[in-house]
Image (tube, rainbow, N blue to C red; front, side, top):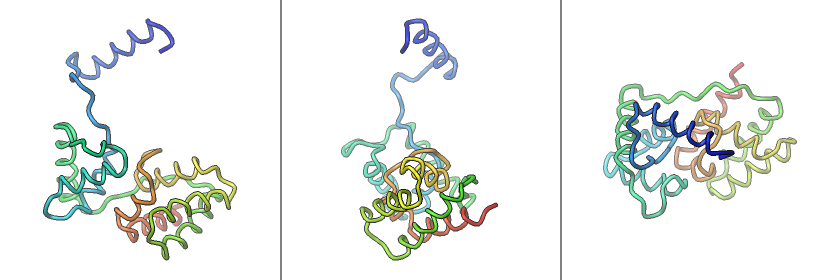
Length: 177
């Protein structure tokens, strides 16, 4: 923090956000859109274990870490949402022409590739080949796929969410507006 006053102000705001009763420990933060994707893809048995494994592989949980009560509640809400609404909608994102061209190139690679590391490299290459900084391109992809500016490593995520689901979402993003 810049100074002690700033820290006191932020602590006060945090307490007010929690109705003056903040939790004793910080909960695990996972984008809700990711939880809904995982809930949709989870097998009927061992759903919590499946989601925890995916969250570990994406870096939201440490390798031996289990979900806390707040995260389990959010996972339960995600399952309810999927059950009630079935289809997950992507966030409408305004894409530049360069981003659209890069996404088109990425789609071609995704249609043939099943290796998460090669998919990750293809994302970098699509960005560079189209004059986009990789960080900006990743942000655009996260916005299209999750509605958040950042997220898990995309190579494994794309395969975990179902490559066809991701391809369909990217194609819809290209065709919007």
